[in-house]
Structure formats: C-alpha cells, structure tokens
Amino acid sequence: MSDPSVPRPRSEHATVLTGPDGDADAFGQVEVVADRVAERVIALREEFDHAFTDPVVLEKPSRVDVLTFKVGGESCAVRLSEVAEVSVRPALTPVPARSPALLGLAATRGRVVAAFDLSVLLGGSRTEPRWLLVPVEEPTIGLTFEHFEGHRQLVAGTPQPAARVIPMATLVAAVRALSPQTADPGERS
Image 1: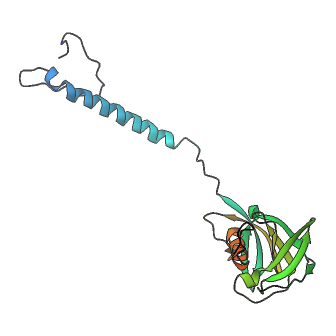
Image 2: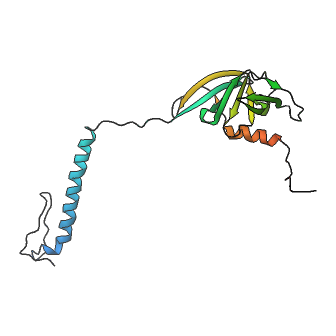
C-alpha cells in the first residue's frame, strides 16, 4: 500500500473512488486506470485534430513500361525490362527445322540468334517477320512479329488499353520446349 500522506498526481478528469470506510487506497488501481484513459482520450483528440492540418500524401502508383505489338490481330505486350533489343526488318537465313515456328537465323549486333515466329508460338499462323525482339533472359533467340504498336507505361489500378501482357519467361519456355533434348556429351548410349 502507498503512504496516504503523499499526494498522488491526478488528471483533472480522474475521479477518486473511496471504499466504505473512506479509504481511497482500496480503489487506487481504478484511479490509475482512469488517469490512463483520460490521457489516451486527450491524445486521440489531438491526433484527430492534427489529421486535418497535415497535408495528404498520396503513394506514387506503380508503373510498368511495356512494348506493345500485334500478333495475329491481338494486341500483346512485354515488359520493357525483359527486352534486350528490338530491330526492324531482320535479314533471316532459312535453316531446316522440325518446328514451323523456327524461321531461321538472324544477325543482331554481331550475334546470331535463332528467329522464331511469335504468332506460331502463341498458337496462330505464320506472319510476316517485320520486327525481331531479343529477350534479356535468352539472348540467343529472337521473336518475330508483324506489327509494332509502341511503348506504353501501365499504371496499376487504372483502366488500361486491352493488351495481353505476356511474361518473357513464358515465351522463352515455349521456345525451349521446341528444341530436342540433347544428351550429356559425357553419356554414351
């Protein structure tokens, strides 16, 4: 028990309760809780009032840069960060291939890439290879398409033009699935 001769600080909102014999210490716990509640109410009022004086800070919406193009009449897009290069009118050298998607070989910036028709990879028919796109993930392949639409910046949470955003990893996986599995050079059958 505390010394009754020492006065305790009380908030102006605190109510002192006494027991049947007038002993305030019996209800000292209630008084402390009342003080805490009163302090919290004051803090909440100040916070509420302050909310109207602080400037509103809006989060910057997330933006994604994409390249858009048409494949078989459908508007498609790939993330710009996943594209190493885009070139116009690639010179293709035909090569024998089992897959109709493989159009041949193309030279880009001193590198040779295997050029695949993006329309065929996506289940459509062959198109005129007017553009060649080289993915960052796999710079030994190129994906051809007919109509380049341009660069767009997509903003999360806003209505976007109807363009199917295709992850580059999906396209690279489709090309890899076309190549025959090669045995390890160390293995003998």
